[in-house]
Length: 256
Image 1 (cartoon, rainbow, N blue to C red):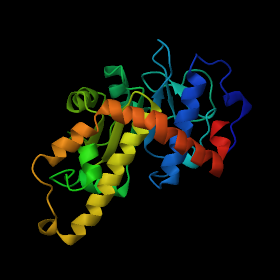
Image 2: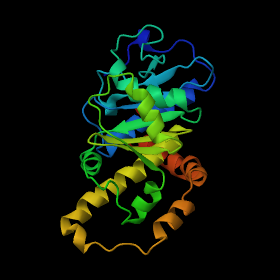
Image 3: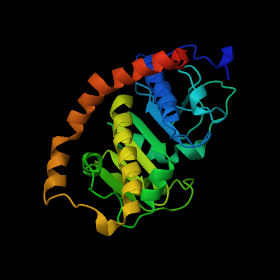
Image 4: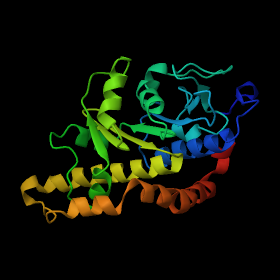
């Protein structure tokens, strides 16, 4: 779906163009890895500046169609800022707006409904520390109980309280979520969480009684070795530039 000329942003705040390109890339990567859910779920990014504006997907586009210019700028209530021919799902921004507004470091928030993420979210014991990836992700994961489809604005307070200062969350009976001070950091956290969930679903086919439990203290050691600051540097300096090169080889139109 091409972006109409009247949809293209006419003026941008400093840093907005870069935020648009990174967020569009994240949408394409979610589609590439098979994590999308038709037109549903959302990835959002804060527009630099004091206006409390955010970027989010047009509700009528598949993730592999999204480009930098097709992203819709919205306010904290999920309403479009400026004219657009694309619909926006304000209810879909409920979860995102809660975290964006409560945490200054939440430059990006990403939420998925993958089968593996939903499966682990429905497991009473949550994410098990039985793989290195789960140990990397697990030390920074919070949990939030399911309250129905996220249209109740009052739920935002409980979401914020549950995630606290952590940068990832398993939404019980729902899916996964990650937070980052950049799109790059947010995406890498989501990647590790999703990979950990995928591995858990596969390893439980052997039966939980047959799993090898890591030595006591190992999960905590790995959590310390993968602190948020270090993960952010790994994302922005190494992983994200490599991912952008991958997208550029496949289809650079996300930059349009």
